[in-house]
Image 1 (tube, rainbow, N blue to C red):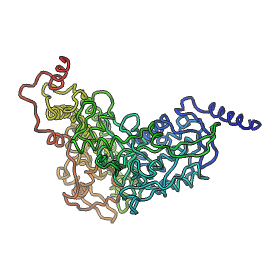
Image 2: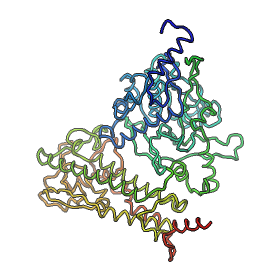
Image 3: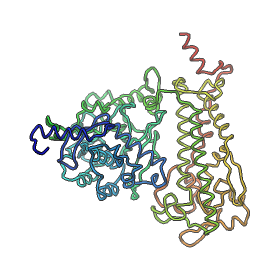
Image 4: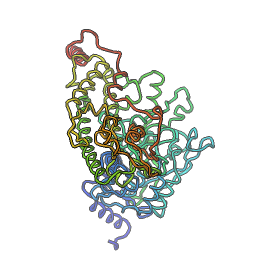
Length: 606
């Protein structure tokens, strides 16, 4: 092949590339270059961004549903675990592709990761492995203040992977030379088309994993779209532990600045918060496909990737009119608008939401009971297990040793987190009743009594309680006797379940310590690092704040006295939904089938 020259050489190379590309590759190689931080094989295309989305989504899934090591995984682990990083799978990465980054480069990314650097690291790493161009911008403040808090920023220049001699140096400069200030670029401002990201349309086609949401000074990586239109994120902070998180959802979607149509010169001033998409670079090539340079895409060129300012327009509509009108529906909040746009085109079944959670809850509780029993056996055989503390790296959620094996502090916090995600999903579904009853599938509920959202909340809670009351968990107490607890009992005990492996099974499952025999209480003290022991009752009381958490703690978790008002307990489902929705009940004579059936009957007559 080396005997060919000019055009023949380039065509031969492209032919070899096309033969080696896997048939299932969503974006086969079309370009070539050996210059730069890594060889280039592909352009960014909408199909490529969906492949990127699948990669990000899998990382999120393993962070939520994987092994304990995967749920605690930091960036270095994420990028080196074949189950978490699909780019380590030859079929997913495709051919041609580029080799794994050197360990020193991966560690450089890990040791400096924060929210913005996570976004850029994931995008840059994916681009490197798939042979795509990647860029970053330098920005300056519009008023000379800190770019992270300035009223806005303006790109001053760009650097691309094509201009670097090594991947290592590119990634080091990428994460040290950028920050959340890079996201504060206003639309249509000076050099805005050189920005790292741009606003994206809130549609299922374009708002996909790999996009981001920018708050004021913090950015989240979009990682999952729920069937009901909710969003979930990957997150990181400036914590010295360099942890990655998955607890943020729609609760974090705040602060979108509305467009100001009265400001004729610059109606989109300040409109940089909100959902954003990476401004994917474009590799310019000669007629043989050889890359000659890499540049930013313009706003017009980003349209096929979802460039859109509508979220700011709709926020202006909400703030000036009090609601958003979409396809004839009146939406009372930006959250509802986002769910409206992103939800799957099928009715939301409240009973299915409850049954799905119940299956997950049952599986979680069965695994927990097995761990509780093993902890009690080990405690009885080998003696007390020391309570961890003293440093952020040795706390109740992620320390090693016997505590790490037998405690359930991490699992319990995650269980509560899933429970409150269930609560929010139920609440979001009920909100559709007054807006679009046809969006709901109410099979299994008492439809004849449902005329208002209040009625629906009551009917849903009644159905939930019936389901939870019929489901039971058999646990073994400290004497080996079977105790039967309904899931309704366990829901009420959600803040009482002890995670401490020194405690007997009764207390692990929420019984009060003072209900135990004096002999059992006496032998269940917890040793702490200063060689002292804390009694069962005192330990249970002092651990109460940690039993309120819905996500793991990354700081030190000492056992110490805390006043009752110093920690927050969220409501369980009944006490959350009932006060919120009470007050708008059905009229005395409800038509057969409730409001949904009534409105369908009216529609059929038109």
